[in-house]
Every structure is written in structure tokens, then in C-alpha cells.
Length: 347
Image (cartoon, rainbow, N blue to C red; front, side, top):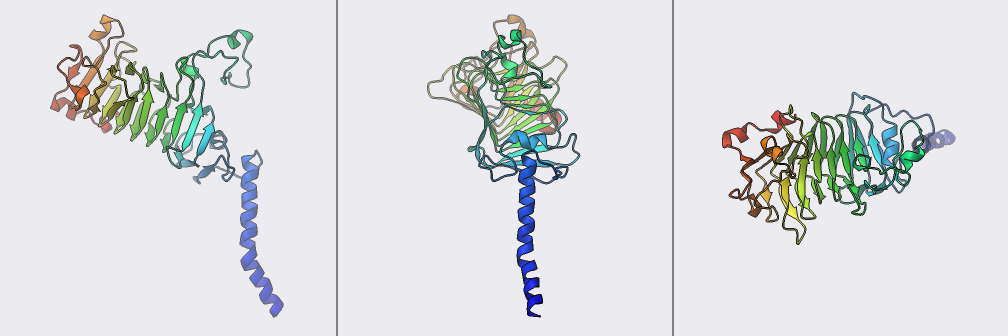
């Protein structure tokens, strides 16, 4: 009887530990390329540089996600610096990458436009090798991303995406191509061309984000709503360079945002049209004294003044004075502004 009682006590106390150990071992094995674990479920994946998660790199966690998931999948990223050049491919949907906190959870890379292809990290897909001619070619703006989001219905929360290249050329931190993308409580750090919204007609939403840069650091053809974000200029230059297609009703809308600048920065334009029908609206924003009285620039092309859609409404701060704004920009009426809502523009 005493032996039977001891055996039951052993089972109750030790088998759960053994089972947990086996599970942990299987997870580690799978994250290192082993088999036996299915990730085709809504369970959260954990990434940690120190090895305490299922994966050490974010790219490894992305790799195990199933194509066109109908459920919501969270990749939780613990504090750390992740030097990765990432792509979330077009066949991935419904993924949320959530950092432990934005200040200390950082995805970073350092490509810039003037690196030659042979020296950079960019490579052709499907295992193809760069030809000698391509190896000598400059990388160009659109290959410099730290994070490229091709998939739709992707969310990023509480994480920093940084391009920390030297100021030797355009250097994109975030490059978007997917639709219905959300960025909540994130930081996007860089110099020229920090955030590239890359496909016309796609819809993006930024909330409580910090975006910094020097020249044209928010640019591209997408429709994007920025809610309660800080837009920080690091040099006398231009904030936006929209290239909104002529047949798309809205481009960039900044609502309740704060426009700030480094000390000594005093001549910043709200935007200039990368393409003729650029659409940019600032409403209910606070604009620092670094915003020039004219507000907008025509990119040295008077023809752009006939087509660019540059709008403002109910802004405050020293940079919001409209007396000297360029004649080809427009102040919205209260009725017009009331019709521009998040639900109408993006979702």
C-alpha cells in the first residue's frame, strides 16, 4: 500500500514537469528547423534574442506562419535589438507583430541607396545570384527597407523600425505594399525617406506613432491616416512627398498630430508633390515654429500647383498661421472637414 501511494505521488508531481520539458525541447527543435510542431493555430509565437523564446529572430517566426490564415496570429517580440532585413510576404495575412515596448524592441538595418548591390544585403529571390553587372549597380531607394510589408491585414504594435544608415543617400525604414495595415504605438526612425507607402489605393492607419526624418520622410502613393502621431523633422527640408494617383480620392491625412523638430531646425515645408496629384491634409494638428509660412512647395514645377491637393483645417501653433500660405493650397470649411473621417477614408 505504501509503494502504491508513493507511485501515485510520483506521477502527480513529476510527470507534468517531464511533459513540459518535452514540450520545450520540441519547441526549440522546431525553431531550429526540426519537425513535429505545427504552428497552424492561433497560438502566440514568442521571439527573444536571448534564446528564451521559441525563436531568436523575427524572420524565423514569420517563416512558420501559414499562408492566408483566416485566424489572428500574434508574434510577440521581447525587448532586444534585432538586426534583420525583413519581408512579410504577400501570402501572409492577419498577423500582429507586437513588441514588448517600443523604446527597447528594435528592428534595425543600415542599407542606403548608394550602396552597390554587391556590398549590400539585397538579393534576388528564389536563390538567384546577382550578375556581375547588378553587383556594380547602386541599390536605389526601393531596396533599402528594413521592413517591407507585402501582406494585407498586418498589424505592428509597440515596436521600433529603424534604418540607421549614415546620411549617404535615401534609406527606407518601413516599406508598405499591403492593404489595411495598422501601426499602433510604433516608432519609425531614419533620415531621408523613412516611411515609403508604396502602392496606390492601399489603406494604412498609424496611431500614436513617432516618425522622424530629414527629407520626404513620409512618401508614396498610398492612402494613409495618421492619428495622434508625432512627426519630427531632423533637418530643414520637407515632411511629405505624396504621389497620390489622380483617381484616388485621398492620400495622406494627419489628424491631431504634433509637428516637432530638432533644435536649430527652422525651415520645414509640410510637403511637396512627388507626383502631380499629391493629396495631403493636416487637420487639428499642432505645428511648431519650424514650419515655413508658405507651408507647401511645388517641387520647382509650377504645373504642380494646378493639380496638387494640399489642404489644412483647424491647426494650431506658430507654424499653423495661414496668412502667407501659398495661394494654391486650401483651407477646408467646417462642413468639408466633417466629411473626412477615418471610416470614410481608410476603413
